[in-house]
Length: 165
Image 1 (spheres, rainbow, N blue to C red):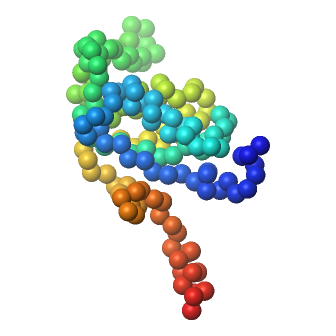
Image 2: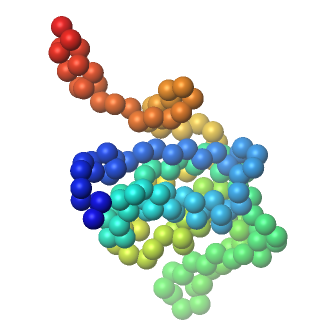
Image 3: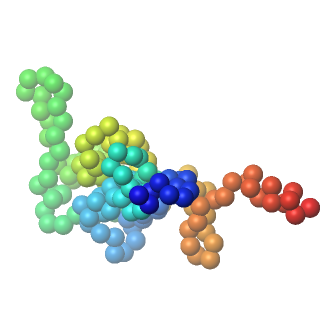
């Protein structure tokens, strides 16, 4: 198999992806959740395997501007059970948005798109959601010529400097 030939360390490295929901042309909640789930699972990589966790990080900003189609804001219900008889609580999407914000809606949608196995929680932990545009992960996105690239460790540059002397 081609997965075992050559060096695969670079393919297993995790990359940070940024998605801004406040930009025009952002897809609706379900389509966006399926794209994020593919990135979290690592299906976009050539080394993807269902039993390995080779996915990337995703930072979603501007979650207050999450969009849905139709009447889902008023009709879609989220349920919560406290294991007591008669304690089934329901909250519609609009109430969930007011109470917890759009980030919780996105997390629940992505949670439903991920496979139901032992890798679900670690994959979902790599999804970082923020209501505004500010987030603490800006240093993880390095840009060269307008393209995002991974930050190289400083040790390699020091070794190269020592070799050139």
